[in-house]
Length: 290
Ligand SMILES: [Fe+2]
Image (tube, rainbow, N blue to C red; front, side, top):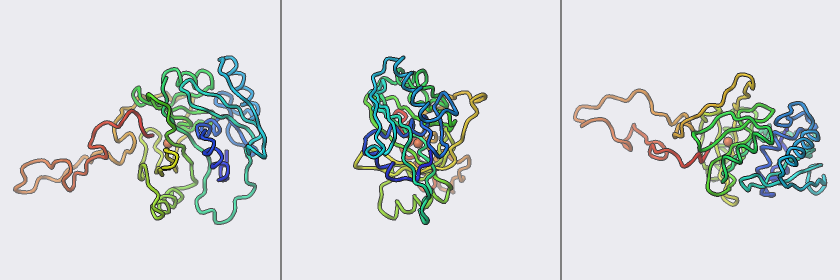
């Protein structure tokens, strides 16, 4: 789903259903030849929506339907609450901008994924795999799961085990590393708070950063380098919940300078040359960020 239309971005964010972004990217194709249903690669957005509808009906999940291009900016939508209580919207036929205007500054390619914390974690992860056809790409211990759709990007959806439902972030894939850096530079220059500064994720290998949306309480990630997996050969891994999972650049260096004469021993964390990890080396809260 080519996404250069910021009005669509705002629309989904305002709906409070940013959860729909992952599924929108995954389940709904666009006239621009975007992606397809998680389980039926190649089908149109309408067909994918029909199939999702049939699956929800079979799973006895209540949903509502609608679609008014002028009011909703999509031709058709379908809304339901997942087993964790998160409101999700699937859609087809989102408005697109015909020609990208010159000087757009940062070239956004697509909504890549969304992440939210959910109670009822086991039933919710089973729902997205069993009913909507997502495939598990990786797990972070038993705290979080990464799920891919038919577009085979490492994850279109991240679910985080929690006692309460909370939207965590959505991610926009940009065209190049220059776009990431330009977005980062402008955010910092404008005083936008970052939830996570420049990083490289261990799970997907993508490079990006997260801006904080303090009004809504979640983050917006800009990234590049998110891989597409081979469904035939990839097997989901169980990854450790350690700081370098969020950012491989925080891993300890293998070499440390020898102690200078007079030093009493190895440097303690916090002294120059031995930067502590962001949380002092402790494990992060349950799969908080990905
Ligand atoms: Fe992300």
